[in-house]
Image 1 (cartoon, helix red, strand yellow):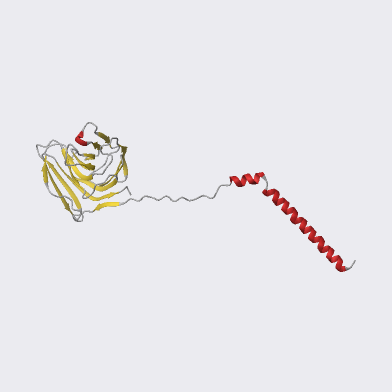
Image 2 (spheres, helix red, strand yellow):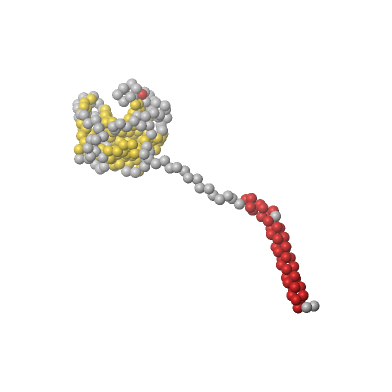
Length: 260
């Protein structure tokens, strides 16, 4: 055999071996891919996680006043009613509500309307302080008020924050009938002649009230009279006995679509 023939034979032998190896590898790969265990594993492999973006509803500012002037057109006219006199002053960046009861008064309240606000769901936030007061006085907040000037038709939520730290929330139906609902605050407010930031959230019939960020009460009311529809928001005061006086200082009044 010539050297050339010997080289060709060696070359062919190598090719045969390579082909055999490739064939063996193909058989192994086919066996692996057709393995029931592998097929089951592939079927159970979860799809890549899909990220779903949820739009977050952000609070919308509806009203803000720091009382640098009276450009919001608050009704500051003085008036008298049922044994009381009321003066409202805006000065030094504050709103002052001065209420005096004479000897004929037997307990009553009054409140000033936040201008051009008529809302159903909202978050009210404001600063308040008792400048002159006694335990027989209170800060009053009227919410979602309807037909306010008609005693037979008017309805509203009524928040009373006593000078001694206690507080109640009432739902007053039209005509003040027997379906009146009352909730007492779970905690006291330590006024101590200091300014407190009060936050009130009213969404549907769900009610929350906070003092300096601390939750005072979370509750819900039942009934159809006031739970739906819009109404005005009012800030005021109350005196429970004759010959008493209360001065309330309000500042930084804000209304949002929901609490920030």
